[in-house]
Length: 412
Image (cartoon, rainbow, N blue to C red; front, side, top):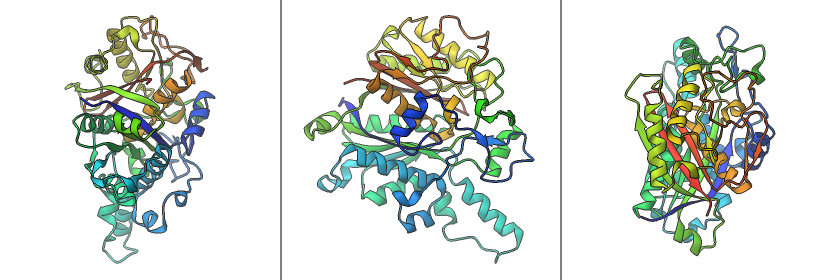
């Protein structure tokens, strides 16, 4: 099997419009949550989210790309443009069929769907839909438009596995390169879910925090008083490249993607297995593929969204997998970014990679009273970053439907 490395990174998310800003604000423990400004959420149980402020798509997108694409696709194009620029790839000198795009999107064009249906129902417009309605809406348009923007003609599709989506996209790209089906992939995920319908749907499930009077502290994984996740938005992009190809061209290499695994809980539509059995198996398989034992992992960026059930189930899985390893430290960056749904795994993979490069772990913020159900031997980075030699890092992403996905990175 061929080896796979990461040679480019890009992001747009509530903590930053680029990787450097995102990383800096993560280490400083900044919360990005606030009252929703995108629409009037005053009648909803949850009125807060982690929104991207001052987004300027024209920095990387032309007028037609902006006009013809939903926000989730704009985020995808923005982050992918950064990542390709960062990679230093000379696309024009490569066979375009050697470069693919596998992208992850959980919901797709919710904003487009809402506006088109509202216009139709209101009767204020001629009762027809825009010819761009379907192209803007469908989830695969992000990968399609990335390929069109840069002339990438290799394998191209979109994965959907709820909040595990970005990790499954990255894993697919990883495996195709290992099998020799491509030399380079643009991969990652994007999401733009802060709309009335999406927020309203999660509100009805009581899945999101209702700490509307104090949004900055609403996302609090592992805290005794957590009451649900805070919705976020944005995208993360990674350039995956076959190692020998990257080495030959003298590429900057951030890390190696050494292992990846997926499992299913086969338990419940929205709740994880309470003992974290599927999550534990995914972590175990990813470690095995990376040829690591449980004592060799240095850092784990947890899925931990700040839900009462999910956080504990994942930590039980960690306890099973790592058996109280004194080397392992864990944290949840969702305490700062909120939960980007289908894009969560991509931005968290970026943080895991950055932790290897910088030898520091971003904190979990907003922990005031640690939940007493948390296994005692798990070491959580709380409120302040932790300086530590990091050679290996793992990133988890789990989704409704019982999807579990895990990535393992190591220094190179």
